[in-house]
Image (cartoon, rainbow, N blue to C red):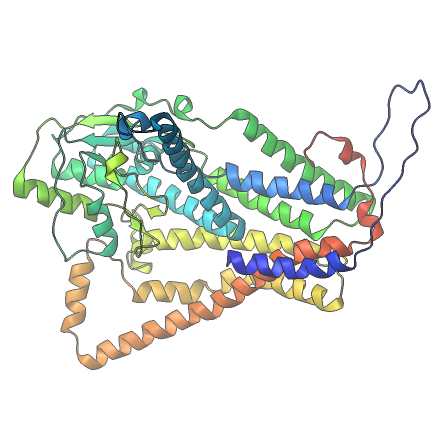
Length: 497
């Protein structure tokens, strides 16, 4: 989708590059002795572009709350001694690892740019799981640290690491779901990065295996490594954009489609950040917890299988790259696309979603984010467009991106109902399905196909509408009316652009 958007964007700008009119304002120099020179009362196309792009990029970068990354060995310990150009090879290995680590937030920032509602859904899913696991631990009178949202979030990020002192073997059991197999493969090393659901299961299965830390020992403010300056710059840019839109509306000057789209990105970012309020960000440290009573053999293999089943589910289970343990000095990190699965404490929710709590929370958050994002694009309803067709297309796509998430609620819940969870109870459901008659199985498969078709009918138009809006916000920059370049007093406020 990203490559398609870039091609469309390039094609829309091609006519502008071939035959574009250009205007350069010329302001007279102030006379000698002038102590203060005010800025011009016009703004340029590039100033609008850079100001909005800075808001979009800063918002999509700062709202990321990624899991703890992989811990690697020192490059000097990896590169062999007495090898030619050893210092250069050490430097090259460090640069390569830095690029690999930097590519992860860049990838998720790109996903947020194209689908900000997805990150809202992911944040809501993580918040909901933290609430459910806290309630379960309170009822079981378990470890106190998992009764607090901050402790659950830290566990889901991979902060608490179980140390087995020596390397463990992978359980060989083919009767597992795809997500469980991924979780079991992550437990091959000496160190286990377990999420809150796995720690909860470990406490139930073997309560005397470890001594979990107390809540008072955790100080997340000291663990965060994200700079205050970057957060302050983001807030400054967003506030400046909102003041500018309000001032232009009050003064009767039109705003651009790109400015309204930037406000939509900022709104989705604000919602995501509020949901993530109790979750730390940019943590790279871990807390090592050693086992007290080591177990071996079949008992250990059974424990690995059970812990794997209580682990997270994943959005993508195919073609996942395996972690090279040759250069790691810690556990396999919890992937960023993981969703913590735990049975809801509300019975009717569990029955309504057929055990798909993580998918339901993900969909509900995405519905909220998509509705907000599309609804704010409707603010450009009466803004100037190059052609009447583009104005009509913008209105249709804005309404579509606002309404389609709500309209798709029924078919998605029907799809969830027909596709029970692949969690702990999946074997019982599969066995029951195999005992049914062939005609009933065929009817069930037909119903599932119809539900999936309904989802596709809503999803494809939504993607096309989003692509149109994404291309149009940049295309319209070359066809702005003269009043759009009139600056207001808000242009004198501190900002970047």
